[in-house]
Image (cartoon, rainbow, N blue to C red; front, top):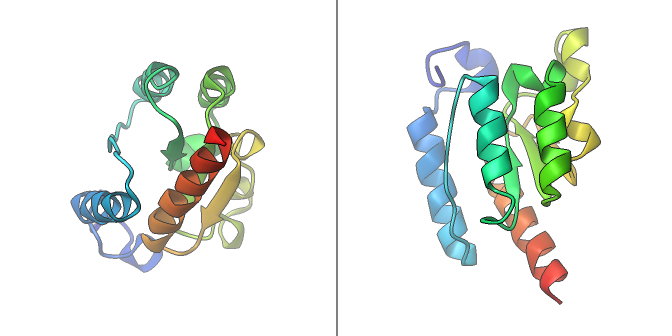
Length: 135
């Protein structure tokens, strides 16, 4: 629903716009990315679990599941991959229930409130973290 849902909070960029931005930034730093989206908690858990032996890190915007999903937290704990949590809006300036994120417990970093630029920063961060782990 990006681009149409509450643009005053989430901006006017679409999911496709953000995917293109991420692909460009990843290419700029020499990373290969897979960009996925789902509204289903179970599918998100499956995506995370399938990353364990296939990927070097995870950038995740768990959206509303940030505040409710122990299953996503457990999946991230299980895969033991560097993880950056991204939110387009500043969750700490919003409703009180949005201030807590289960994902933050396992994330190496949390980026919020910078719109799509947060994804670019997350790609830079994952690149640095994974390069340092290779040393």
